Length: 219
Image (cartoon, rainbow, N blue to C red; front, side, top):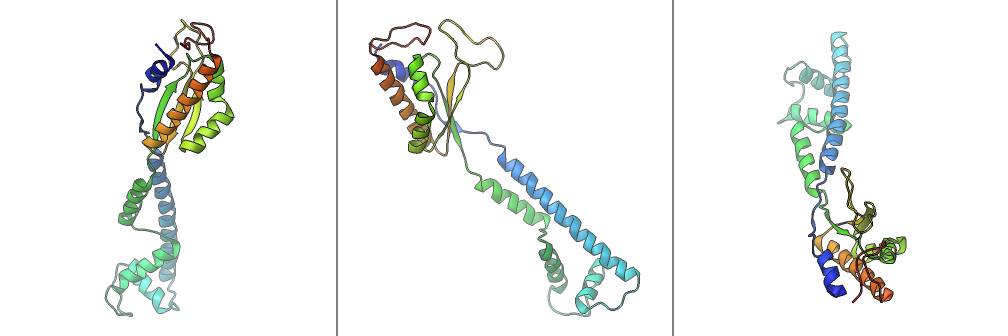
């Protein structure tokens, strides 16, 4: 088996898939918390106005009087106009940035839709020659690949010598975790990783395995 077939066997295993992301849920929880705080503030303001009513304060302007009527469940008679009571309530809420539950739900839905999808894939590099692993996991190489593909690359796992296999739960052979904004991004990153590994293996020339540094050889 020549080097191209060896590498194809590794790089053709995975396929980019959408990353499961909990960000929308976290964002929704943050929105709920903020809106609840604003609702509490609105309640506090209403309570203070109500206290003035109970205390018999009569020197309120027409707007305050209308607000008092709303709080007491009455109708607004001092001011006229279609939907005036609702407009007044909306104005009060607008001062503190409170949104009604329906609007809150719409905002959460919009936030979820706007959340950017991310794709991910993996490439196991454990059995490549040591120098090839060093080359492809170097800071400079990863930065160059990221610049070309817009994908982020993270080195994960532990190196296992030929003949050794992971035994503990969660253990994995060393691999590259690739995450990007699109399938194309992932594809470009894998193409670049493959190119770097191939060039290093070709440079080694007569590398033969299995050895402690990997099991791939150049034919």
